[in-house]
Figure 1: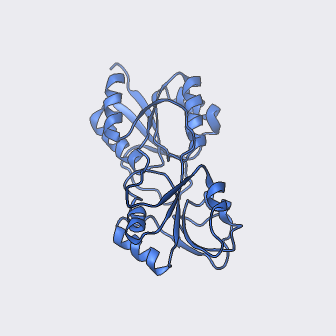
Figure 2: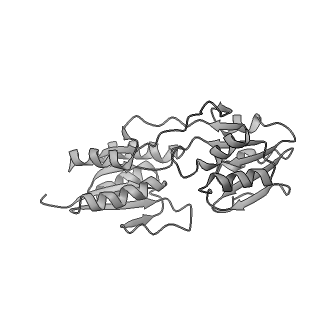
Figure 3: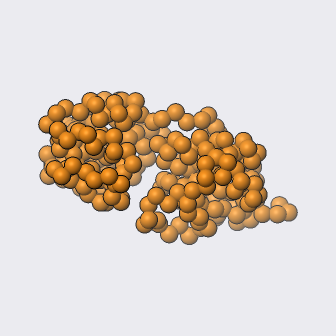
Length: 248
């Protein structure tokens, strides 16, 4: 290569960080930049060049891609960050750069699971029984959809506090998802949880709560993923690296 190729990775998942490190190691002549939206203040040390903050929509992202002579854009955002994925799609077209998406597989129920699939947050909130005890594992932004359900008890967990106050009788835990089924089982048992509500994020790092639900026979309301643009996609960082090899 006569000049360095630039790759921008839109982060938001654990797999995005793995991909950034692997891409730097596999393609040392390539400049890899990992971009975080900045919605979480306690960001991990990735060991690769990092930028933090928004771009200003699709047009702003397109300007960034052009100004930095980016050749490849990789959307490795959360499966529910649909607005960012659509911005990436339109920006890549405007800037005429290749676009890939790291699209980890969604979860699927096993024979011992009791899952109910719903299309969106509003449907999940409307379907909860009065007086029930639920674990809302939906994130700090989406929790606002459930705040009117003061007729039930909710345990919710997120990394940083939500913008709006929660009902007084709810419980907020500021923490990342537990990595063990035993820890999640203890959490569900302690709070006598009767149902889990969660997004179908996929991946392994937050599956423990679903394994605990299976063990305890707790039903799950699973919110389906939003529609995303059709682009070249791969399920793992390793698959993305193989795709990159064709471009570099």
